[in-house]
Length: 305
Image (cartoon, rainbow, N blue to C red; front, side, top):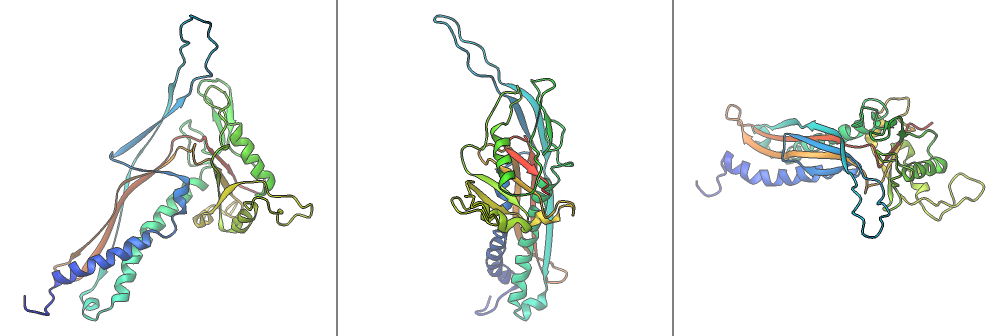
């Protein structure tokens, strides 16, 4: 190769690093949805998560008596098979010839945005469909009435009603603190690490106001002090929910207790190659992942009012 001459392959090798950096930067946009899930790097085509019935309290035992046998039992299985998602953009040989670098970068950023948009849409739809389509391992809606496997006839609901505000935030805390296990015993949640409260764009300001612990509650004349301690998280893609509740819905979770998973099986993988027929550069991306609700516990949902 003579000095100063750059071949197509040289161009590809030099540009890929820059476009890859642009791509990875784009992936960092709009990632608050991850706060609703436990992220796991999957090594399997199919992931399975078990739900257990935990044992009751330890038993008072007389001196010299044998230990009392307690039981931890498997009660339900939740599983998911990962889906694959792909996309590509083309950089024409004319764009290379004319040094249209801004357009090339936009194509790389666009691929990253396409990946992140899909993740945002899937995560948000899983949540806002939790009142009906998204199922808990017990077969019921994620946010609703749940049967208790080792307590026949007993149920517990993680669905509340009412408009977003201090009263419903209190209802959320009460609901979590009174959570029941599969034997209908109390298994309090939400009393440790700060709760995370997820809201659509329309409730963003109100959620921030109510999270300002120690400040007077906005909009009230009785000088009530905010007593709630939570992280307000706005998920813009919750606005894709049905019109019936897209502006009033809200959700809360105890991040130490949730069993909602995001399984990343592969990627996102970013690659470039030369199309020999056109001399175009093709940039492509592939990602494989899935979401799974392995238990309803640790979560509370409301459509609002």
